[in-house]
Image (cartoon, rainbow, N blue to C red; front, side, top):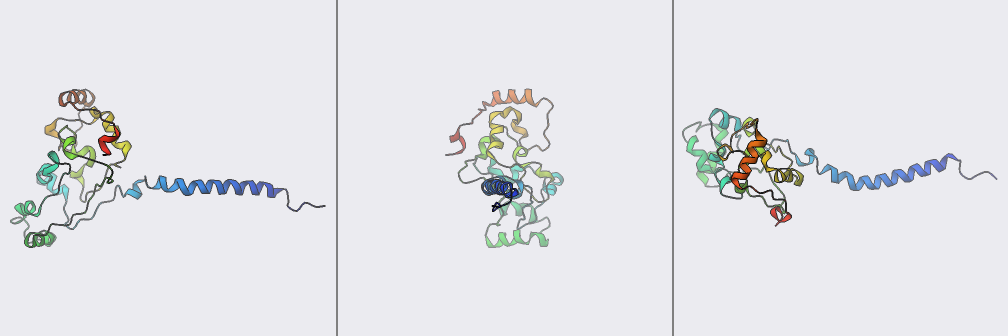
Length: 215
């Protein structure tokens, strides 16, 4: 009596079983991988703002320091954003009739804050304190990149737990003199030696406990 199925169907059946198993694994693993990609995080995508604020102009051309606008970075968990009052301190005389500054003028007269869009946003279960990092010699550039070269600011670092731990385990790789935390392009040739000395001088601890960030 002839076989009901041809011999090659055994191979086809095994291939189908493997394909189904791999597909089931892919359904679970693929989203886990994708959410870790820059595309999902929109990591390098410039964030549109209600005001076309160009950091290149303000930092490079006008020489405005990071802490002039983000004054809370040294004393608060959040760096803060400049108030309309601070903006108008210059722009009530400079470019005060520019159409680009209409949102600033509208905010000034109405008393309503400018609705800036957040660029860096860690999950709610992560505690991050700007002040402790800045006052321990961690530069703005270490986390935010060369903001002085950005027309529209975008997220440079992936803000993953591994990225944070790389710094927490070896802070000497990133620590700089406190008076240079806002310096862009800081690249000393003796970072390893200087960093170890600064870590000792500042009493910087290599904190990697869970409760340091998850409270």
